[in-house]
Image (cartoon, rainbow, N blue to C red; front, side):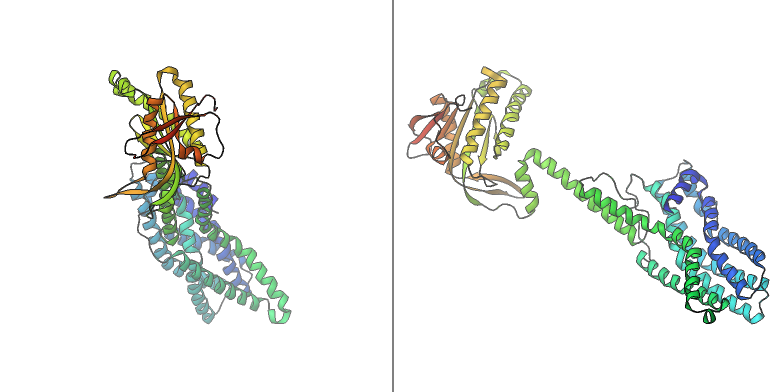
Length: 502
């Protein structure tokens, strides 16, 4: 049924209220005709044609008064659909105010109209005065019950296409106030009303066909006939209410697959509308988290970014870890920066880091800092890495090879590698934190990188780094013990031939 409403909106949007009135007459006629013919049968009359004609006229008349096609309340919606200069939010608010006035008007007009219909059909059938009073009471009950069954679903189903078109690609529906009663309350009342209506009609038909004399099978047949006659009207009334639930299910599947691009249309002012608005806020939050993760991963190592986002406020406390630290530095970069523009200098640095960062990450390491014309990388923190020294050596060899292939003699680098125990964690204050490494192993790696200028090696390892390797590298050559700034004892270092180690 929701497709029917949507088709009507797409085709007759500027005259939508008239299309709704015509379709409502068509859908409601079987249900009210069943009541009229039941009265005719109960009175054992044969004036079926007259009863049908009266039912059609009364039904179309009171539905016109209820819907008021082309009236002032609905005109703003149709003007927006026609392309007039109408504010979207005003048009959306008009759909809700029109729906509420339609409900209020329908509850009064329909009850009176059905009362008149039942009395009129009773008079056509030749009912007695006392029986006409009973039909009047029955009309009040049936009119009330009928509206409780169909009214909410009709309003939401009929106005849904208009609201969906108005709120398309906007957020104006998310913040509108929600009304009462809720969808759940309407549904409970409607189901009780459906049960009552079927019981009354079944009792009338049971009396007409004398169920007591013909046995229970006749009651089963009467019930089946009621379902066949009234069922399509109930389906037409309630199928639109399933649409927001279907849309929510489809939206959750999209979000689960990583698609945050489509918002749910907020087209109801009840608890389902509130649920749709809440889902949109949740989806926006997830999309923002994804954007944050992508942006964060641009400035911070992706593994570190993922761990920070997972832990939230529980930032890293200091952890004592054995790691391998690697410093990479450009030789004679001060002279290059002196004779080139700042733009050329930054371009040269970024070209180097385009090599360093992927090589470190692929080896399982983490680029901790960019230090002017160099970088500090760590292997073994924040994530565990079993053979961190081997990973550092592999990354160093890869970096040297790629730099040589890309720049040749135009860029020379030095790499210092050391293994030791550090404190890995966050430091800072005043809302500004940084993941860093604290320990003598970091200082030694920095000094060893500076020592490459003295030894002439592209890559230097300390004795601790060599001891941490899983296998002995024949390409290593001892460079003796050297005194390093800040160290009381000399440090044994080894040069690694990056060409032989490839």
